[in-house]
Length: 285
Image (cartoon, rainbow, N blue to C red; front, side):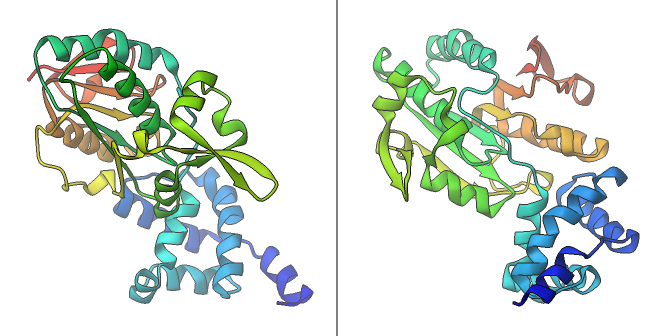
């Protein structure tokens, strides 16, 4: 691609008709509502896909990405990957993990519910799920007979692949305790950059897969003891959010817990939950 072609791609501006198609697709397919102000963000992120796909204007690109051929080629998934946000880190919103460790786990051991099953819904690149695996491994050392498994899902295939690889560096590992880092991760050289990779003690306990929360039926009802779905619901339109919350609750066992982001509340969506802490709910019906 020469300079003129590259300059032409970067000069492309997403217009309202194409943005409306993307808005309708994201709402219908994922339950995600893109506000009008997001047109600038969408423009910026999809410029990359114009360059990668070789389609040098937005009208033709959008039509292709939303077509049957776009699904078959993987371009639709690539578009979804660009338009979904994946900010995360180890031990993010750590007060929730303290409650999980100090209150939730002892309660389940007392009631002899094992194996303990947990779902990281909207797992992004895996930091949350691996945080859970570290906490549960540490708990297991002091509680003979306790066992667990973790499922992690995200709508983005790209970040699920990162989660499976389990390779992290830079700001991603800033909140990771040095002792846990040495115990559960191994050094990984990525070119000139020193990184770390999740070891088998974590990887053996976590299964990652691509999944859409707006239409998620893979797991049977009453399967999980705890679901973490944090800082994900804020992207859903209200009706879709209600549907997602109630779907998540169907997957939780009676007496199980749902954790959402600290800025999120879901009490208004179900009478079958009791708020135990800000952003922590227990299934009671």
